[in-house]
Length: 63
Image (tube, rainbow, N blue to C red; front, side):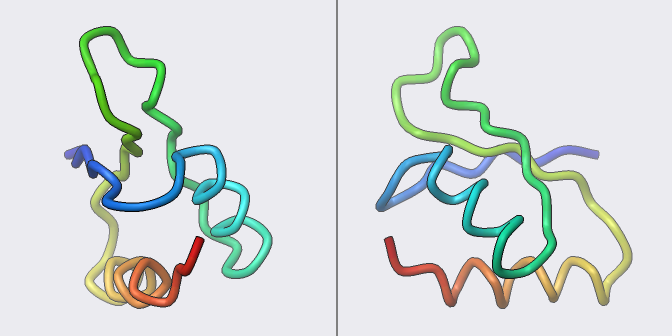
């Protein structure tokens, strides 16, 4: 299952680069998906532990 996340701040490429560099996490930059007006990333569901890791990383992101 995939989730599409609309970013409240920063850009999808910025977040993608930061997550890989700082946390070893990879998300899909969806800002170029047809029909999307806002910067978005796509994430896939993983284990509960991995999902929590992503949530904590997203909370820590300060563009």
